[in-house]
Image (cartoon, rainbow, N blue to C red):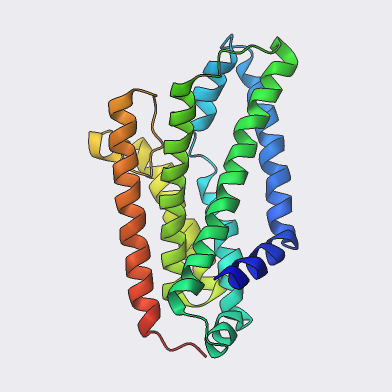
Length: 231
């Protein structure tokens, strides 16, 4: 498992598409923070807007699908199986690296939005509180649940092109389109609609749903991958 993670993180350092998207997220975040200067007056409000924004989850999902899918296209996963690595460890290593990468991209967006706002309106400490820290953790759990869906799709298809297309479509529909039509409590607490406030009850229910969703997606992926024929 350690060797698998070591290799995956090494490949992540060389992943140029990921670097480009990171720079894009930083640029968009800075612009968003600057835009919010006209309508809000503190960094806590910037945080509340940025942390719950699902607008770019489809882009993060696309990048993660490329990161995972190319290992099927270049037969890296097949070679790892031949070398004796367990299939569950192979899947889990991809989930860990993809999850950390997704959190970094989302975190860069939030931080740059705060910096964009602070550059124009000045710094304030209103954003720093336990409630916001818990809020961020729960949102990242929701993001990981979404990415576990990308992992599931990638391991079901076994091809980068199909994984990228289906993962992007999955994230765009669930995180961008459905929010315009669904307002039920079930959807607003799901991982496809990042939690909108830092009330304790809301955070607890959202965290539970995110954990269950992620567990189900990964169990299905592990079950199917264990029985798949990999060349």
